[in-house]
Image (cartoon, rainbow, N blue to C red):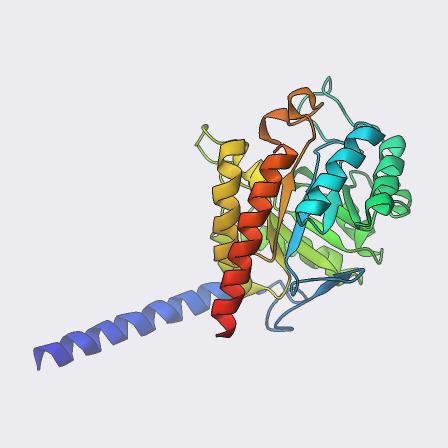
Amino acid sequence: MNNEIISWSALCRTRMHLSILQRRMRQTMKNIKLASRETKQHSIVEVGDLKIGQDFLFIAGPCSVESEEQMLETGKAVKEAGANMLRGGAFKPRTSPYAFQGLGLKGLKILEKTGKAIGLPVVTEVLDTRDVSWVCEYADVLQIGARNMQNFSLLKEVGKTQKPIILKRGMYSTLEEWLNCAEYILHEGNPQVILCERGIRTFETYTRNTLDLSAVPALKELTHLPVIIDPTHGTGRVSLIPPMSLAAVVAGADGLAVEVHNHPEIALSDKDQALRPEQFIALAADVLDLKAYMDRKTTS
């Protein structure tokens, strides 16, 4: 009898907890219409033959485009390791106005040339509404960085393009705020949005940011959009990129974005958090093995 009472009490508490969670979820999603799972269960974003949300997205490349030689050497290495998209910044939003700001148009041309040479689509960040149209001429995928997540004019402008958009989470932003920003892009008619968790600012100083892996399963409950992880900016430490990458796969991420540089010691930006090609090769092997294992486990 006592066991029955305890079981009934536990069941009531569980139901009450689920009811509270459901109310919170409805409250969170009240202004989010197009990005909500209530409108669609699962989205796939296509970039060439790559189906993001179905195929595992592996973005790799340097923080900044610096030279043709640097891009080609790094690009060949990451493709051989298993990357299916090349990244590189032509415009860099830096904390200091005296830091390297990127090569601009020259960098875009180098990035495009490298992508064509190695046979990978390319992704780069766009910072300004005035640059969107011509960045679209050189890049296959546009990225909205953390600092511009709530740049609503920019969100509207990229929403008018037909390019896939990677929307990074702002370093102080809630999931609701992030999804509302995705809603801006979707509302303008562009359904090709990929969310990227890249770490949030907390009181911790050992890491550059705090990578919020709980965002992955949480977003899977809230939205149909693909979710990828950036463990490079999420940790700021080369030693932490491999374990957090593997954790991201287990959490259910649809892909990873990792910084790789052929000579990180002389990189013009983010030298302390860029993997060497040989480190990326080892990481990619572990990630792809784990992903294959998890896929087998899911289908068995």
